[in-house]
Image (cartoon, rainbow, N blue to C red):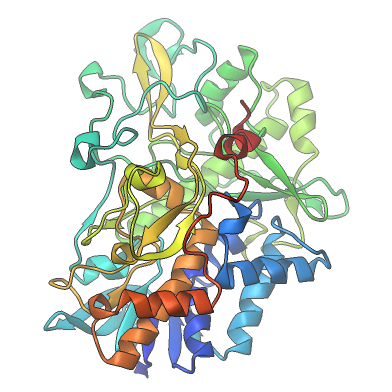
Amino acid sequence: MIKKDVIIYGGTPAGITAAVQLARAGYSVAIAEFSQQIGGMTASGLGATDLGAEEAVGGLAKEFYQEIAYYYQKEKQWNFEPKAAQYVFHKWVKEHNIPVYYRQHLEKVCKINGEITEIMMEDSSRYQANIFIDCSYEGDLLAKAGISYYVGREANATYKEIYNGIQFGAPHHKFEKWIDPYKVEGDAKSGLLPGITENDPALLGYQGQGDHRIQAYNFRICLTNDPQNRLPFPKPVHYYAEQYQLLLRYIHSGIWDVMKLHTMLPNRKSDLNNFGAFSTDYIGMNYDWPAGSYERREEIFQKHVNYNLGLLYFLANDEQVPVNIRREVAEWGLPEDEFMETGHWPPQLYIREARRMISDYVMTDHNCLGQSTVHDSIGLASYHMDSHNCRRVVIDGRCVNEGDVQVPTAPFSISYRSIRPRSSECTNLLVPVCLSSSHIAYGAIRMEPVFMILGQSAGLAAILALKNKVGVQAVRYNELRTELLRYGQVLDWSEEIEDDPIKRMESTFGK
């Protein structure tokens, strides 16, 4: 039995900042982590920070990046190697004597009169606390606690939004040429090329319609072009060159942009992310993840490994690929000094969204666009509204991606009410990652620095609930705000700060 003041499920950056805040205040805390590592995506290849406005980052999130700068002996450093993030997170955990329990697969949540009393794992481990914080990317604890949540894209009509639901006609990550989707070009009876999920006009839906689909996952792959540290891309155990025939057709049309979003990190490494119509996003292959069993998630995880690693192997080695592209890709490889325990491959799949809680306040695109403001800010989000594609379909004999949204936003405040459940559902749970938000608003919130901010704010809210012996809904915001500001959180955006959201977005995707 592990008994603490606060138990955190999920060793993501949010979980770590929540734990550090609690430990610094003298409260007992432990982290139960599903996997064998902490740090989530920040420590698993996402080294090109999705920053937004630099001035919007405060508190422990800012301290993390200051630690990164110190690691590299720089005054400022936002991009970093995975091992640098791992170093900082493990340093924090050790300095604050925070116990971390790995391979903890949540099985059961016990509640009495609206309070979680205990959570149990598949290995029979039991955790008791006065407050629980769900910092998982999937929202597994909130779901097993019976909290209301949503998976997929709400219709625009649900919250009177503009950018939610089915989205056609995006200016980015689309096919720039007419690409035939059939195995035999022009012959619909020959079947679809792999990677195309729908060919039924009746299933296309309409702009803004809600559905169950979620934006694509991938790995943020750390690569290097340093010959002294570079390992050639290995051939996956389950490798199918046929998976990339659509990409090959696209390349032969004259488009080569798979590795365009390839951001350099220190020491000749890079963070490879999805770019264009066909890249590292495994579009339409993740729908079962949010509510899937652990076994089903493992299947999806391995399919993403095979797809992403197979993509790089294909581009570097397959003789169907033009020789100049093969040479370009072969200049890169996996870094020998990263992810030694997992074959130099990042261990964390990029779960861009899964469950999202539904509480008393739902963050929507009205918040992102500055049309609505909140009176109980616990931190700022400042990245643009960002949804990756959700599916790849056939329209009039042409291959089309659907679901991409990229809309610039100024920094906006996130409500305390969005990270705590309704009082009728649970009074001692906080949810800083799978918070109450629509799909498209979550696209602007779901960035790792923001998760660090929200994790710390959840930790401070937990402290006040413990101190005053009240449920999380009864925490007085004025008192919470005072504590947030005392610990360096940025809660309000000043119009006097020079910031160009359009320019920030264009710096990533181009004009």
